[in-house]
Amino acid sequence: MTATPATDEPRPGDALVRAGGIVFIIGAVATLATMAPLFLGTDPFPPIAYAVCMLMGVGFAIAGAGVLRSAAAQRRAAREV
Image (cartoon, rainbow, N blue to C red):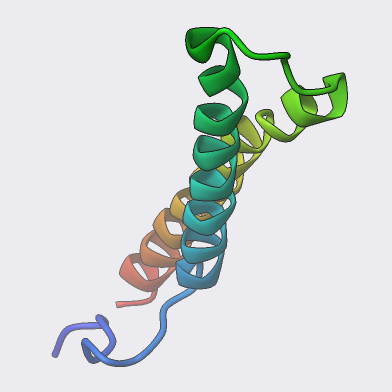
């Protein structure tokens, strides 16, 4: 018998990966929005808009933490078998 959960059952780290993906997408959209005025020749956004672009890195870190948590849970489950 294997220690893997059913496919529809949430595993440790899944929520972090989803949240990280959402935060990353928000940061990516913010990056596109802040770069557009530079190509269109209009006035750039205020500096706080560029700070929102940092959400890409934050989202990547959150998703990475979710992957590490999932890997740790799989290692623990493998040791228990």
